Image (cartoon, rainbow, N blue to C red; front, side, top):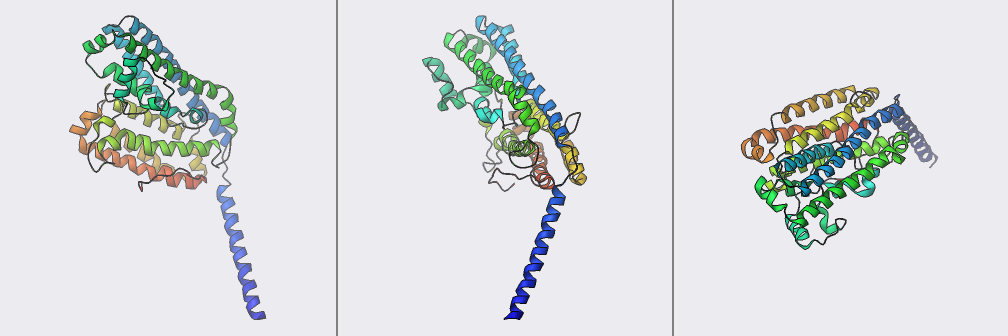
Length: 356
């Protein structure tokens, strides 16, 4: 009996020793000599100007809308379209930051649900009775609704349609609502959330780095890879293409938006001209992962460069090239979602069911 107890005691000592070594190793791995506050300060300097730029462009869009509805003609139509395209591209620079102020108002679903619901839009215009805050109107507002209102018909037909006061009012209300929602989030990034973002150091899910990397990955996987390319291409529908699910289908600026979105995510990773996640990986003895990620980002940019504006044309005439691009986009997920968080001690908390 005593012999058995001694064996058990020895076993417990060994287990405790192994556990202690494991804990020491874990603490050692997470004890990264890196200036997180400097990283967050620089990332703020990347993020805040993008929100400011979006906010300013939406103010200009509303000015152009006002001119257009007062005098619908080719010149004012072109002006409002240009302002819309600039704003939509600027949205891509912040669309993946669905945390903090953006999360509190559900910004992404408030401004960019596509495909837009044409039937609801036309019903709203016809009745002139609607609440853009209602859940039933999620797919009848924001950038996709404007894309439909300004581009779905020929110039002459569009100008003719906007002789209708109800349609004028709907465009005006949608644009004002969009500007109001963005302005609210922008104001918070410039005031109350500014110090919150910069002070939430660490790697837990409530930290700024934890929130940023989780949202970057979730957006890249669901909204960039799938929403912008995979779903229209038919990846999620057994090869059946879904042209109606194309972002900015009417204005035909899909690839402009895709490139703007990817460039913005790249700037977060590299910190634009300052400290970025790449530096954090290098400081974490993970320069090998950073090198692979950097190389893959370059490959994706090269793949995207062969496409221009119109996603419909790409699906129909450059299908194999687009599939190859999708595969290169897919490869980055493993490095961004698995390797990078693992090396930095960050837990990925969102779930997906496609097996990556």
